[in-house]
Length: 131
Image (cartoon, rainbow, N blue to C red; front, side):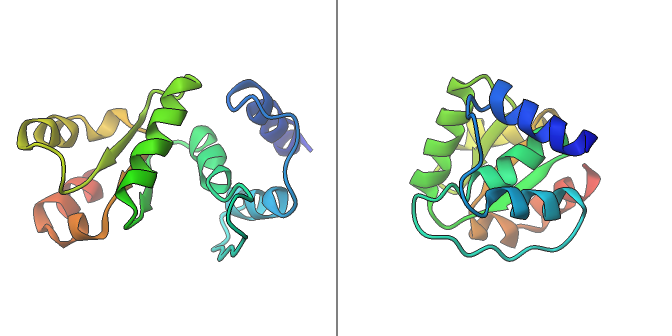
């Protein structure tokens, strides 16, 4: 019951949403319980919240791998606009200076969006393993 209260409180306070959409609450409950989850929901049904909300509550870092770079960047902008400042998109289109800065500060982020090709760099994988 406490976890349900915490989820709804975070939903309201952090994300400014009054209630879950169909399917979200069950998915988030399974994620919060530590279960592996495969969620297939229609476009526009709020899939992002299913990892963003747990990421805001979990200790440590949540990695989101997506080939859709513009979507990643949009989600990071949206999160920052609602006060979730510890999100970043890491991809091959970043300038080298910006990428270096993000990699040096990985521990400060709660939610890291990354493109699949980033996972092909052994140095970056080592950095993720450290955090």
